[in-house]
Structure formats: C-alpha cells, structure tokens
Image 1 (spheres, rainbow, N blue to C red):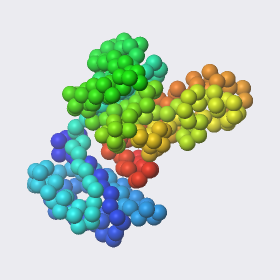
Image 2: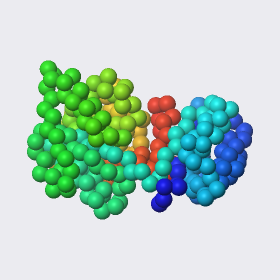
Image 3: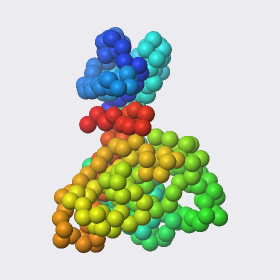
Image 4: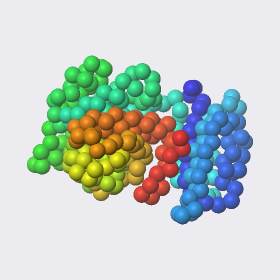
Length: 285
C-alpha cells in the first residue's frame, strides 16, 4: 500500500453511463483501477460505487484529482468521498464492564488483522483499564449519571477532537447516547448489539431468547442513531442452539458472535466498504 493508492465511494440517482464516466475520468488522469464494485438499488433508484485505484506518475496531485471528481459529481448529483488507502482510520473504543469485544479489537489491531489505529479506550467503569494499558492504549474513565450525562458527552467529544478520531466503536458500552451526540457523529459510531435485531431488544436479550425457546441466536453490528437499536445494520452473525442451552451458555456463545460481527463491521468501515442507503447499508465485501 502506497500514498498513491486511493478509494473512491459514491452514491447518486441511478443513470446510464456512471461507471463509464468514472472510469474514463480516472484513466484520463493517469489512474489505474484495481478493484471496482457497484450496486443499483431498484427500490430506491440509487446507485452505489466503490472504486480502488492507483495514481500513476503522470497523474495530477490529489487536489486536482478532487477538482475533476467534483466536476463529475455535479453532472450526476453524486455524493462522494475520496480517501488515501495508506491512512489508517483512528478509532476510539467505548466499553463498560464486558471486555470480550474490546480485547478482540485490540488483538486484531495489534496483529495486523484490523487496519485501524485504536487511539484510546473510554469507559464509564474503571474495570478494563488494565486491558487497555496492556496494549499500550490510553484509557479514560468517564463516569456517567443522568445528571452528569451532558458534561460526560462534552468531554467525550473533546477526546474525539483531541485524538483526531474518525470512528467511535461501542464495544458493549451500556449507556444510551444522546440524540445530539448521535446527530453530531452520524455515520461515525458503530455499536454491537447482543441480539439478532430487530428481535429481543433492550435488557437481558439472552434471557428473552431462552424464555422463547429460540433455535438461533445472533449479534448485530449497526450504525448508531437517535432511535435506540434501530440504526442501519452493517453485519450480523448467528449460531444454532437448542433446548439444552441455559441463559448463561447462550450468553457465552453470544460473546463470540458479538466479537466476530463487530470486528467485521469495523474492518469494512475502515476499508470504506460500507455506504449508507437510507435506513440500510450497502456493504461491498
């Protein structure tokens, strides 16, 4: 991966010639496409495209390339973004007392399986400070009560700014974020919900599942919105269970599902493979 590799993502009203126009522009500016994925949503009339490309020696600078793309975007009413592939997204992880997802993310990042930089860990409890410190990651204890929630969220936003954070990950963070915070960071907060949404929302989902005698359990990674547990779904993972599983055993299986689903969602977001499509997502895997 070099500084001359880019990822372009875009969405716009579906129309004839979009792919050809993008390819022609990139080729005309000395760029070579190395990966391309597209999707036209018949139900919404929207078109989605992810293009990975290399800028050759004869290619213009990034500013000129952006200017050329902006001109094309105006022609097709595109919403678009361009990233350098060599720049790793900076991530802040929020957690409460359950550390399995945090531990999994820290391990994957250190071992090179997750191409992000975990800048800091924030928790409303001090319990997992040892885990963050063991990976050399800054830890911030940020207690939250109904009375102090506005101040705590203001401090959180201060940490996002000071660390230059691109993405906040709720790795079993058991606090509801305010509507204001969700709006400020729309599309930049990923949560792992310990259930296969939209079923069994709220508290003690594995006990709800046990009471209903389910045969499948799951976990859901989604973007956070002001509507609790209703944000666009990025990834879900399931496991088959049976009548012999206690709530505790269901929860143990669920912890593995949560870790896997969250890691995939974070990885795809970091690689710019997730595009918002209203209340849903398009995921170019």
